[in-house]
Length: 339
Ligand SMILES: NC(=O)c1ccc[n+]([C@@H]2O[C@H](COP(=O)([O-])OP(=O)(O)OC[C@H]3O[C@@H](n4cnc5c(N)ncnc54)[C@H](O)[C@@H]3O)[C@@H](O)[C@H]2O)c1
Image (cartoon, rainbow, N blue to C red):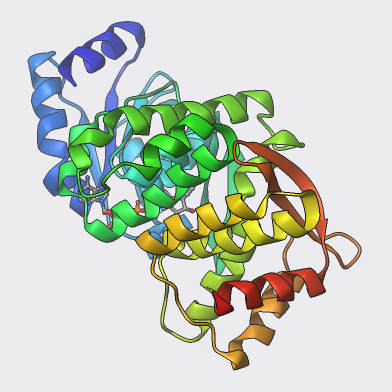
């Protein structure tokens, strides 16, 4: 890390360095960052926010802005965001808006942030009960990937990031999908090259369509059904992790891809078998299925009463803006439940 930081410190023409971390990254990741900084002759000022999604809000942003003000941050100050997606989303937003924008660098510390949240320039906060309601597109000056940060990550957090890596392989890289299938997820230390590959896939998609006008939508594979599944479990107060819900979404949407754009049934089975072995099947009770369809009916991507999804025509070849009827969605949900 010292080497990567050294290059960065030489490149950035800054007046002051700030670090944003949360309670957990303060304990597990900040010491090695500060060590590296000390040996480079730097002593950044550190702001620690409370951990968790519920703190990705305006109140935390205001506290961070106040910290900047109290410490005379100017337009040449640089913020280093040391954390998962909550820290990178919120830190990016606070930096992008302070004094009309100061530079920031992401040092993602969760698998999800390394392969997804830190990449693509979307930063923002939740507002009232709406997720990511306030935000902006602003890219970090740099993203530093330091995989040893992951050593302290809880298993549930690995599960979340893993689902996004599987998605990247399915939408863009058949060879990576074949590698993932033979990997033992427990062997975390061997994941470094897959993580970098996965991050590269997201960068490539984002570069092709930075403002999500079209092609970037392929990143939504698994997410339309996944969000609806996440919502019904949240409503039942038995929350399912985002990654788990996306893993279910990818299976149901694989079957939909078979119905709508010709994904072969053997590929559907392959995706299903692999995902259920890592994300064991959950039951969606009959009473909740109507709710699930209702959530789909409210999806913000819908057009003229039809659901729009990103599906696969083959593994590694996505199609966005695919029209799916509610009957087809219902049929695919039944297929998943009967498997
Ligand atoms: N901007 C985007 O494009 C984008 C994409 C996907 C997700 N997101 C956002 O990302 C957020 C989810 O990100 P997340 O899953 O990283 O959640 P998170 O930031 O809440 O991190 C999960 C938990 O792990 C802890 N943690 C982080 N790093 C750790 C480490 N190295 N060791 C031990 N504990 C550690 C955190 O404190 C937290 O408790 C959501 O808010 C979501 O909206 C944004």
